[in-house]
Length: 541
Image 1 (cartoon, rainbow, N blue to C red):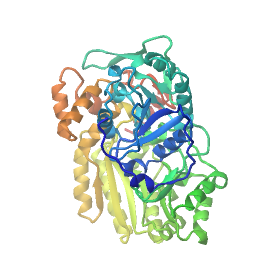
Image 2 (spheres, rainbow, N blue to C red):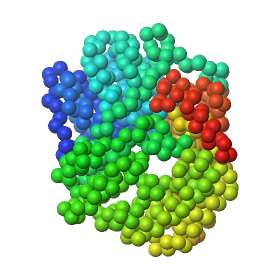
Image 3 (cartoon, rainbow, N blue to C red):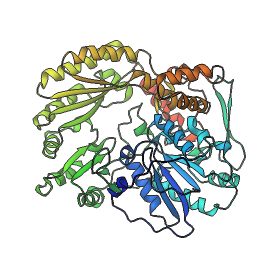
Image 4 (cartoon, helix red, strand yellow):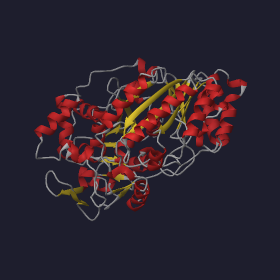
């Protein structure tokens, strides 16, 4: 191996909140990697939980690998796993495989190479652009998949590679891309069919969903995390709102809420024994049915020294009580997602929210002594017009006049289509770039902190989010050319005639009857249901 970066002090600063197992003599050597720096990776609750679950097994010898540090690595690992949370981290995966002297493509690996597996939200949503780089992909929740994967792997450990892959493909939720054939109309055309290469391989792989109500909590606390010394607790999973563009809602259905007194408070108390910084996570934390009781727990005088952070909250749940508690617990701002200032656009995306509630949230935040309100918006939503963009600008101006003592920030992204959502058939709207420019000019001049995400990089996200296997060649080239937008243009130019163009993947609207790259991978809702949700949205166009 050509890896040279080693650090012991990084890992010595960790406080473990679980008891690792003692590996047996014949424990399977496994490398569990996160394709980013340690401070980013260790702040991922998903990575923490999966790592701890693996480490508690005595039949595994687990080593962690990040792009900047690693633990002592085995000379001959049998499994190498990656947790992928951000599309553009794929470049680091390819670099790490190269550093480990492992061929990038599964078809080039032999019996001497480890099986490469992956999981996480990016791979669960649409693994196809990365399919040729992985031997096995875990679709769904680690609570359901990990034990089945490792236990099966132990039973076939001495089998040849082909037998291993065929056996793993029959475990629910385990997707072996090499056992499926994709056919296209032409090298640059749409997909015509995706079929298993043998009757023993399931025609569809179903995402596995953990349906229990005990959700995740930190397994390690460290000052070297991106959020220093934070203990994270998952308060809810999924979201009852089901905004039609939202992967976090649709991909993680159903909405689950742990009991406050039986589960959440004991988890939080465990964290408070090692740190005073608590983070409450979830797509819609304040919609937990017992959230008021959770607030009462943190409001107790015994917890005056606690530093409390809460993920984005539903706008109409921002009360003075919540704002006061956050202010008293070292939080200066609160974040709400409004998507748009246009009532019509919010109907399109199924955002159950009106402008009066947004105004009241701002008033309550200010009266509760918070210093800032952060809002998330989006442009380029299907059906959006210039009038809708102006409505967002007007809303922000109104908030500024109404609550002048509150610092306002509007983070604004461009709509990016995601697999398994009703808007998966829509492409990125090129007019979104102009909308961002109009908003920037109108808002910053009024003292509103406007923070747009890059339109061009949003297009690249859409490229990957709706990509198929042909993109693997483009992704390899972009890694070779360097991490820049120009690398994608150069790669498309070199592969002209061999892959569809950028517009096909990222910008074009797709017909309902088009075979999607993930058509053989079943998410929580069937396509017919997504089509009904899409029809409901189009009624507002």
